[in-house]
Length: 379
Image (cartoon, rainbow, N blue to C red):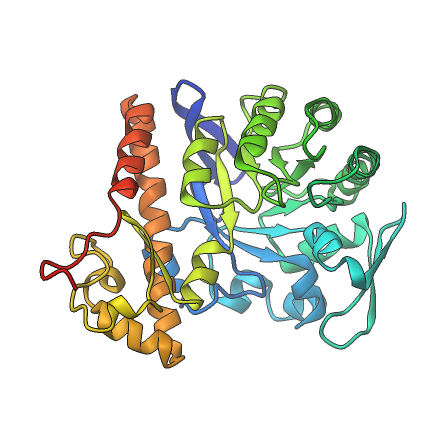
């Protein structure tokens, strides 16, 4: 473990990067997928399970933890690591995404955002300074600037205004963050689906000389091709010696293709949310356990997996749990999905180290294309 925050590149394969983020609470092997623990918990999982699957870092959310149990309370209880029982690195999102997703409940101006709580309707003010203060009270290791995210497609004028506001808020967040040894604040590049705005945002934020840079405002309604174009437009202007984090992404294919464009870190609710809704991710693609074809299928999700969730439960049983709305169904499928995502990242890291990333991508996609093979009896 390092007493200071740092990032080093260990290997490159084309634009794909294999590295390590180091800090006092541990090392993050990159490319990394961060399971989302919005309210201090990765839904349907024990955190020791999450760690055993290979996760080096989890994500918490400023907005939700601000509402309950409250940042000051978490601080009094020893910080989020102690409170949740996760002694490893934690990244906290600033609450900026909720500026977009809860637009009906907020008012935004230069000062910050006034939210009306989705829990009880009480008003809360979230400024750049307050966002950083909350993240400090939570004692997170990587803290994100407050930004404004615009859903796509959107008007260029709205996207440009939000991008410029986010740059000004990044400056305020940097001053509020100050010097926190062993920790980092990341800025967030905005600019929607306009390459020139992405470049302007990136250049302005790089001038702040922060310890890491995120790409925000993607996977919010745009086609995959547009997302990838914006990554090309953005990463070209980010420093090579600092980590790059693509926020809220995504599908396994999005991750594979984004790594190939120089991204180091990812988070997404997809594997946990899908598990709670009866969907499993496997090396043969997505499997919907609600479908009647699984009702008498005695096969596991993947007999070759080293994860008990994929290997030790029959599809028939999982189908029964999901259709009966038993909590265990969502727990097992979430376990399976997070195992799949961590195995995906381990394979990505190994392929970059071996200098065969392009071949690896094609092999993974070929397995997905084979599909989920039916039982021998054709049922």
